[in-house]
Amino acid sequence: MDVLTFGETMVLFNPQSNGPLRYVNSFNKSIAGAESNVAIALSRLGHEAAWFSKLGEDEFGKYIRNAIRSEGVDTSRTKFTNEKSSAILFKERFGGENPNVYYYRQDSAATTLTAEELDLEYIKQAKIIHITGITPALSDSLRKVVFEVLRIARENSITISFDPNIRLKLWDIEEAKPILLDIARSSDIVLPGISEGEMLLGTSDEKEIANKFLDLGCKLVAVKLSEKGCYVANSSGGTYVKGYEIKNPVDTVGAGDGFAAGFLSGILRNLSLEECGQLGNGVGAMATLVQGDMEGYPYFEQLLAFMGRRKSVDR
Image 1 (cartoon, rainbow, N blue to C red):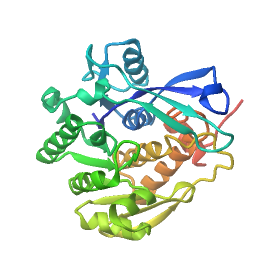
Image 2 (cartoon, rainbow, N blue to C red; image 1 turned 135 degrees about the vertical axis):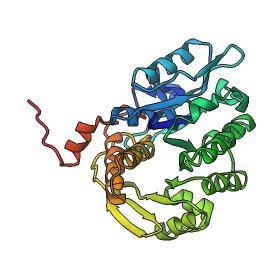
Image 3 (tube, rainbow, N blue to C red; image 1 turned 120 degrees about the horizontal axis):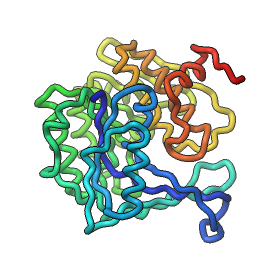
């Protein structure tokens, strides 16, 4: 397999109208989860992607598994339990602002996944393992899973990709910082945003963020700069990669995961550092064009057309 990732995916209820949720009566149902977002985006880009978790033996759990599997992602190592429920979340919208997000995930099925339940031989098949900082925030059990996967990856020379993805609704920065920096030290590729660099490293300068992660032992860093693009760097130096202007973004949630998928797609295609950044910027930008976390991720031909590298025939 090309990329393996793991973590909690939730059922997402997206309101059909703006305003406080107490006045909203209709929702669209979808899925949301940083790791499954990356897996789905990579699958659409033409790569062999896999995702695993633990879900409730309930209708929501079956929906989550089926939705991810229908995108061509291997979900064969996902487990189910009767003892806990699958997680859900609601978005709340006010005009053109980014939505508020309300999680209902405490003590969910995913939080009970243990390191003893891992299929070690399956994990060893991955070329890249993608980890986010959300997973270790959810439970002590999942934290142990993360570090066991890191151990397996190091022992088998598997490339580790890490998106810090700090969620302060899940834990405070004092608890998160040492754990996320430990993961970064074991990672080959790190994909932070400016705010995450500031929280973890004490600087909001993208060049300093990249250099500090490289000093920790990372081989490659891509600092996300929102609509401005990204700054990518390795031991040979760094460069800015221009982003794509989206005048009226619909929903920015999922853009960072899209960037990660596009960037990893470039790595898998053995592209230059700058070209990897261009793919990441393109997928991230396209993610903002529609409501939902993963609905806007393109297939590779669509991405090339969006980037102006291939003509699009509309009719």
